Image (cartoon, rainbow, N blue to C red; front, side):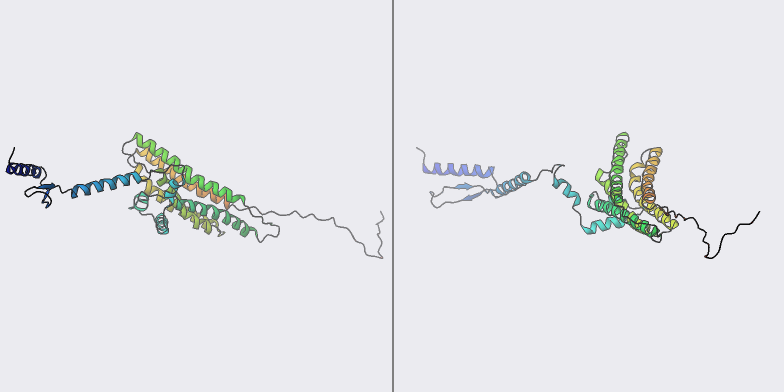
Length: 305
């Protein structure tokens, strides 16, 4: 049978081995245990902290929401998450285009919204219809034969025209840029919503132009139209030129010419359809045949042959 000293020494040897394996461990002497008995308590503070962090990360990953589906309301809600200051700042940049600033990179900052373009198109369509009715009334109110009747169908025509332009043209442009991006490696492309956002804000200049078209001066109307097309077209040129300048010269020139031509065609079409001069309508007046009246007491005499 081993002596007590041997047993005590062996316990110390086991504790020493454990301390060598875990240098950060602390030794605790227990009064309840026999004298010389040493117990080992590992310092598991760091390990517990690590476990807590891992548990927190796991909970966060498990609680993270999956991206919403395209057909859900929450998916489209993110595109209307913009405040008034951002909308006004983007409108200001669309009215004051600078050659050194790209509308997408410096203004949108890859965070497009649909709130501004939606209400700009709605306001432009309503302004076109109302201004057209007022222009018709102002041009013919002095004519006694003119009978005014509100033309409510122009609201529908203006809405369809503006919204189709603001969506179909960016869709075609986005598809063309995607195709050219696959052909040429250096050709860039914006996202579809960024292109829609650029077109929507570029139409804002047409709203005050349509209101000023109420002035019945043909030369002034055409000057305002050219000015609006030039200012709005400059926004489109400065935005899309960095994407297509690395493409061939023919493709770049044709693309930019088509973009500006469609933008000008919208203004010209609105000018001719909504602000055309109506011909004055006159009511034909029928004259009754004149009757010869003979005074009383007079008789008709005929000259003898």
